Image (cartoon, rainbow, N blue to C red; front, side, top):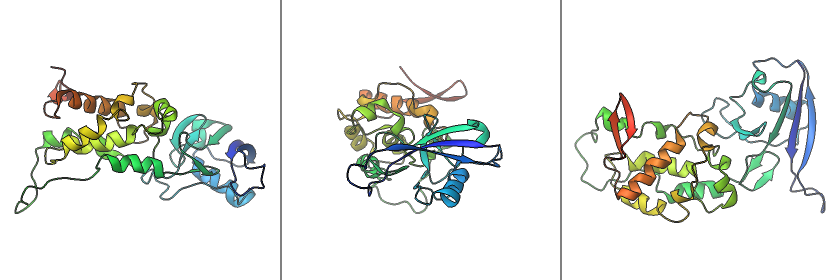
Length: 252
């Protein structure tokens, strides 16, 4: 089939007065339904316009580098098939971050928020002879949030982040959640203090844009709610309990 692409372009090296975003259209022939959008963008770059700029790496949904807005929704280009979008597709950079060129955004503000939540294991207790043991149940408390690949799809789909770039954002909260609810970690209170800041979790308005935007299927809104409850209680202990055959938030 033939596919028409409408791509938002921006060239920071253009002549003075022409450094504005604009739309450019391309047509590809011989497209298969199972072709991935990333592959098709490669065709446009290699066959029609070598100046088209996009970020990509593994092409298997692991690195998260090819996040972009596809028909108005944040997606990884390597995971979207031609049959998922039809014969016409509109592609633009993710929102809320400065555009460097075409579909490439500056990720530094995003990673600054990520670093602010101390996204690493903290434990100053004497090291055991072997590993630090943990029960299967305790591991399940944060299993979902270990899946984050830092693609920024959730954060840049959030209207609160669009309105205020100082908001730490869903992805950073997800990363904090992974360690806050790890029973082996000793830095939970430090992270809760960071997220209790006015630009922390309380900027979340529970709009739910973040959860469907996640290409890894993480329950982002739920994780944010669990962190909020931990702040209110002053501790992550007992926030998530096992019930009805699954991990659930305890409101008691």
